[in-house]
Amino acid sequence: MKTVSYLETDTLGFYGDFGGAYVPELLRENVENLDRAFRSYCFTESFERDFTSLLNDYVGRPTPLYLAKRFSEKFGCPVYFKREDLCHTGAHKINNTIGQILLAKHMGKTDIVAETGAGQHGVATATVCALMGLNCIVYMGEKDIERQAPNVQRMKMLGAKVVPATSGSKTLKDATNEAIRHWINHTDAYYLIGSVVGPHPYPEMVAYFQSVISKEIGDQLIAKTGNRNPTKVIACVGGGSNAAGAFYHYYDQPEVELIAVEAAGLGIHSGKSAATSVLGSPGVLHGSFTLLMQDLGGQVIEPHSISAGLDYPGIGPLHAHTISTGRTKSFAVTDEEALEAALECSRLEGIIPALESAHALAVLHQIALTPNDCVIINLSGRGDKDMNTYQSEIQLQTDES
Ligand SMILES: *Cc1c(COP(=O)(O)O)cnc(C)c1O
Image (cartoon, helix red, strand yellow):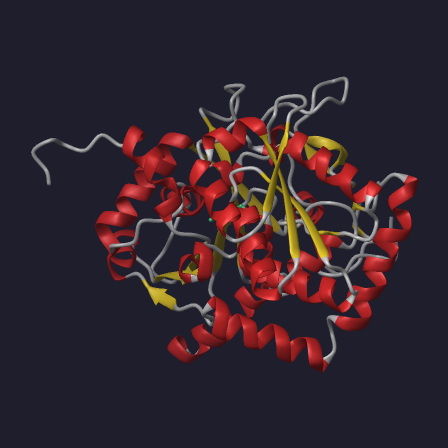
């Protein structure tokens, strides 16, 4: 395969060796139509205007770039947090949801179908469907529906239909299968994917919608320091959409180190982990050729992470490509290290981060930093949704109050 720039796929939708559109014949026309619509609409002034105005007035962008003073003192160099936790609905996911629903509307679609694991993507999708007056159908594993009751209630309040996936392990991958089946049977529905995964053009499209993150980081950093480039940008990777957004405008700036943080779960080699870039091998997952955790027979290995957003057996093809070329470095953080970092951030900065984002924070303890460093951590989301886990997993002294 021809190697193209980090941000563009070649005509078949590959980043280097990874990507493509491995979809059933019945969906081929759908993904081709989507690709055409994306290219003809999402780079026009009219799209730009609508997208930007919703990001500003509805999501609350630009999100602040915050100099975390006590973190900076502790780690001996400036550490900035990009505050995606302050987005409406509590995470970066809504940036992508708004972009794709504008596109769906432009294509004349009235039904939006999505799958969700922990419910975060489902909530972001249901939110924007309510805003735009579109029907929203969210597939969710039966087990996840039980585990994530508050998000199920949110989706229902927002008017979405939540459909249980009852096959297999009754979790995310089964919900994905059901959503794809729905799409095959209703080719007039719009299938909204929540990360930089899935068949071409989804990874490229989602990265583009999230690229607002690094565009803002550059503008904000130059205003604060006179320099657009930090020395390091750090982000957690589930499928990789917040990382793709935070890295986007820095891929072609070789002096900026890009650090992707995966979930090591109970330990990379414990059998309970989601460290795909270490444990994975090339194969097809969710419609693209990428790195995934699979057994010798090609069956997907169930991942594990304490954080639902990182509990995914693959990574998007852009990350598979940039990690394999060395442009992006990957690290892995255990459940326990993430919990410690969440507490550290709460105590030092008064910010309770999402468990996913706590993985990005924890990597500060694994890398060498000098006073000349300038570090950006993409704080992908806030911790409200994780309070149950924090409550059961973090032992606070009883004499503290
Ligand atoms: C969903 C989620 C993630 C993981 O998804 P990516 O596509 O890898 O960004 C990370 N952080 C938060 C807060 C999330 O909700």
